[in-house]
Image (cartoon, rainbow, N blue to C red; front, side, top):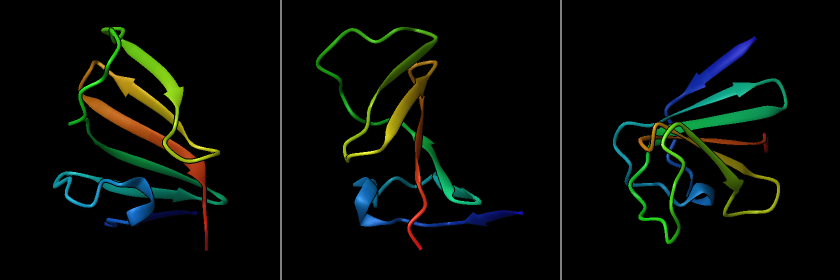
Length: 75
């Protein structure tokens, strides 16, 4: 079962991102938003993957515009 929530949780550090949502699929979370951070390195134009801000998170930047954050759900 999929749970769709509008959430601005402080652990992602994206509280002020207006167009974001959080998908909770079982024990995993997928946070989707527009990327507003400037990166100190050259970003791949199609898809760029990096370690997240917190331990256990994976960030995927798609088309230099959309940021997907994968993590384990915390209930």
